[in-house]
Picture 1 (cartoon, one colour):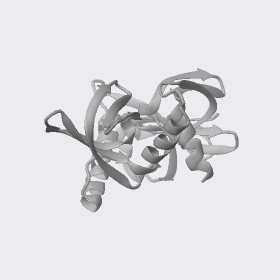
Picture 2 (cartoon, one colour; picture 1 turned 60 degrees about the horizontal axis):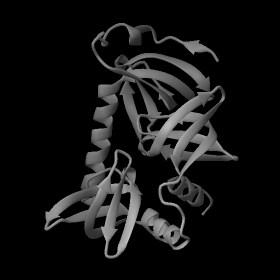
Picture 3 (cartoon, one colour; picture 1 turned 45 degrees about the horizontal axis):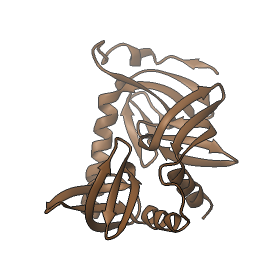
Length: 222
């Protein structure tokens, strides 16, 4: 790996009390003023004075130390554009489905919702929005294809809270997701759906919910 220094980027514009985040980003264009980077769901320009340092990891992939505030602002811009286009809050991709039911349990990773007689664990990352509407009832806006996948899995009587340790190559990392190299495939996997990530050198171990991992694999080959 060859290290790269950012000359002017590490000097003016960054103060010691600003939070920095280190990410592995696909950099598409570099100019004297900014980097065009791929954040997984969209490509955005990051001002060069928001970048403290960078080093080459692989072809087109840089490990970038960047102001967390700037990444957050770029995400907010992307979210506003999506809300204007779809009328829905949140940042999930694809078609959504609206449900009314009860919120039976919640953890930092998932919600267990009750819709009619059916209780289902769904990762938080699959909700575009949810809100209490009174009388113990909630309105849920859920990623449609994951909900359909989950209902099929329930018919197979699988263990809902099962977890899996996946060994994969870490190709790219944004503030929201990992790009994993697994069995010849490249899979975007949201950080919020990762219970634990451990480096093993070139390979990493990712501890994830089995159902959500199976869903991502199915989507990859469909």
